[in-house]
Image (tube, rainbow, N blue to C red; front, side):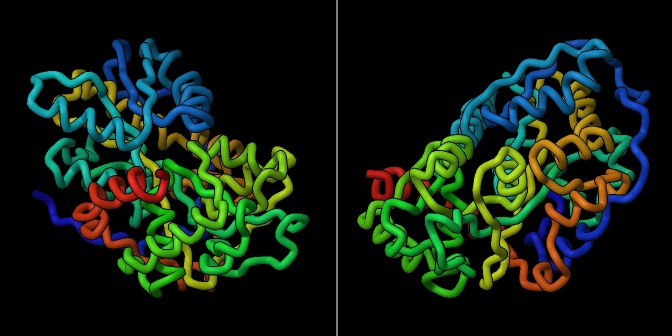
Length: 350
């Protein structure tokens, strides 16, 4: 098994400020036997819609690929991967997962080691994004979001926004359970593994009336209608929602940002490995990277993304903010995820 490490702060630093270069012509690079069916496991909502708009429609479908999206939540798709592990052919060719869960499914023996020689666009990947277990295509960080009309005193930390004092004006996103629990642990206990302290804080928030929203989109609707005044979310989504006219401001937490990547993994029993690599390669096309930056506010993972400088200043982080980015211990998530999800569903949400 390849050697893997934690997502280091210094690795994230390498990605900041990159992104200059020109877009290459649209279309899948030579070397892929175009045509055939590719099944993509993904979240639903905006992300699924933009995969189709920014990757599938411009790059894959014109080359003859039939792309089918298998939409479900992250835990459900990981469970499906595990359930299908003994089958000679699984039902999905490539899955979209966050960085921690890309690591997890690889360590569990469910996905293939990435063969970068089969991804022409990978030559432009930022060094910090070249993982053996998955290929990140967008990244951001977890920040404090708030509506200044509903929360006049701007929270400057995870502790400030994850506060029972906000009552039912605080929103929590169900599908973000891992990151919410990590942020709560950091806010209440001073480090990312102080789960008991974090759980206590979250139960106090729930008792005070904190609202739980099933998805990122539902959380955004709560912000838009004024049902809630704030919460924590990726800076990318803050930019996206600001562009949509939602009154929300973003603040980098004083404790340090939790970094986030979203990328692609290939199941060991993927029916169409060639199609999976074609999909991953298309996700790294400069035009696709630019489109995700514009549409969702995520920074690119390739050095030739060519993202507009003004936009990059809105979606990225300052050197001072980068210096305080937290290191997520992927082994801790791997060893505790089942217990975290069980507590979240049976105690926090109950």
